[in-house]
Length: 226
Length: 226
Image (cartoon, rainbow over all chains, first blue to last red; front, side, top):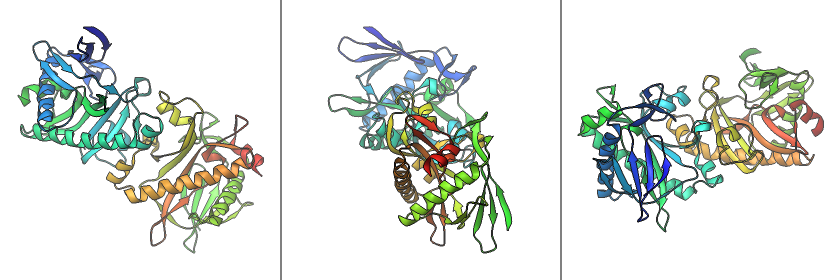
């Protein structure tokens, strides 16, 4: 297998059968040693965080499969912290799709004039560009279409999938009395028909989850959940 | 008449008949002495810029009136640099609506990964919050609706009006071989039926206009145009 890409929190290898292998690492995004799922830099390294993230990812992707939600997931090896996935092309240079249930993080930094910290938001969906240099700017449906990144039809599918997947994750977490504040997804086009599928991971590293009003660290989430 | 509000580029007085009087000032927005229609601070003061802005505003608002576009405009006194307008309430604490024909300014700063400087944009509309402290963040149709600032129906009207007015201004300028790159509008709700109307001004101070590839300063625009 061939190393294709070194990411912040995982490395990507191409397999001989055309599928891909994701190697989960012990790095999480953040700034100055503090975890922030919205950050563009590796903020800290925590032993076991890769494996913990994969355990959650495997669980959620298998729940999504049962529910008929299209994803790139094929299989996972927890021991080796690897996940096998179908090939998918990202939109442009990559988008992040955020689903919000509470006003925190960058939402509050932008819209604090109109929202209180922690205020409920009804599964609000927004898209940001993956662009470290420009600090992942938010982008509208119209701009995505005009710049040839995502058609309006694709945007509709992406938004609908985001709301469905967000709700499934939220309900799974609620079974353990964990409250999902926001979650970040990535999508891509897979197969000949360019179907829009969920890619990347679903773990503590790309969500903000709380229990009894207390924020849960990424590694802690896996322990609390299983 | 009573002073109601001191703005960056104009002061607002309430008249005894319930209408308002806008006193255009010689200040323009910018940073460090350089004009920038998107800036939040007064960047420089130029003698006569208030009167020049009003002359253009009067011209454009009268063209819009002829074409049946709803605005707050009643009358203007160029000598005194004042404009009389109907009362209108802004959306939330105020929005700016930008119509873009070329990729420059904050559009390029945000989406430079996907757009070249000066690239044509087909009357792209975006909305930003007037919020100096948070640097006027862009905001989507969904967020405007969720935060109770603007309903989806109102957003549709706002976007349509923006595109129509932008095109009228662009065509007026084109008659003098002036090329409109982008323009910033403000809207409000007027009258008992809360009709969405154009408010504020249309002048060199809230657009980027070019001639023969050269940027035209706000004061210069009035001279070139008349």
